[in-house]
Image 1 (cartoon, rainbow, N blue to C red):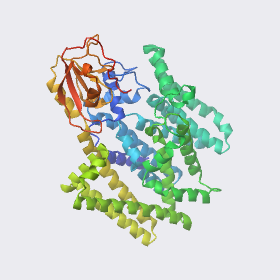
Image 2: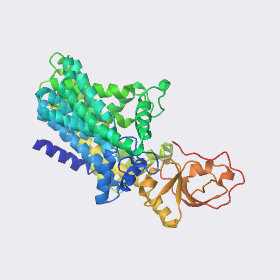
Image 3: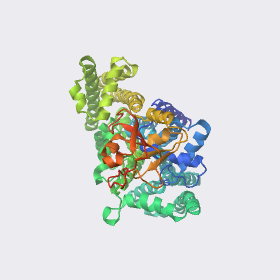
Length: 565
């Protein structure tokens, strides 16, 4: 237990180095931050995303953030910390279960695989509830697995509490994910009778009661509309096919999550081949924890793949069993005697990492020495062009982030080479770890924060507030730039359709994208006077502050601009 606590604190310390106070840009969670404002205003049970609709899942995450903001102020760190802490706790839970059920070395590697994976780090930096859901469903799954082995009521109780809190974090997923995992494992093992164990049924029932307590309170406060909005609009319609009334939200093919998992856990998924072969060779005597982790992984993947709506962040909980399986594989190759084919496939994964890291460093050296032609930069997407410019500026300044990344990557390549030559798997997998640490630290601790500084509208927001008199209202045409709402201490009213002669009158000052302004018919722009324009900070172009002059057209135009949904 103390070791798990140490692992959790270590993971927390590492995650805190990834610029948790970097400015927000267009993160999805920033659009939901208004729920915290509403909670602070006293609407605790059914907060609204001010401006916007009521919250689309139970508000546990926003409650926790609101309590932190109340104590320490409104800032980026206050929102990110409640994704960072759950991510670190997840690492501790993974270590504890894997160390007890498999081996300590496998547990350490499982945490390394999880902690230095792109999707996991990205989720830990997002101001949303997904990392918190991952923590609760992971705790529920391992608690119930332990309870089914030990038959101790305390583990059933812990599992029930985790299910309930997961339900309060992201609705039915808090109970559906653990339920599917446990059911899949028991069915695979032919333990159908255990599905109807009174203790297991009681655990899920108690978890459901905890979760539904909020729905009862929400119904008492806001009536049935909030339940329809949450359950029908944001749950059922995202899952069911369009032919049955499903919504067109994050619609992706069935296989969408498979490549996402492979890419999201690089470089570690390059060891998937050796894992698969090792499982095949041991199929008649596969360790029980590996069978459970395989059921865990497959149940989550199939569940979300079956849904019509597939957003990238949905699959986050599946990276936990993946890390356990890959941690077992690394430990097997390093500390046991795997077959020659397994060892060769494992070495091939390390070679691929070494080649990619060496080419990246070599390419960086060439770019620094010779520069990058402007014609190449012009062909890039604006965000990619910004990344290239940031890297070149940092390299010209001999920034320690760039130098550290290059030195550590080169060291990792050398360790991989030494391990391969001497056939010492421990050496070359440590080389992969160093490369993963260097890349994660450079990308999330330097490049992403630098890009955020370029693309945030925080500075433009401050200019707007300094220019607009305090007694004048501000509106926003279009809901995409949520950081404008986040950084404004004054309310900004959403405008769903602009008309010069709107009744009641629209706010005298309006924020909008220049592309929207240019798309208006001349008659629509006649009553608008540009006051302030931002730089083209991202691919969406400049933002504008305009003032209504009062010269409304005699007839309303049919070309008014509506915001994107």
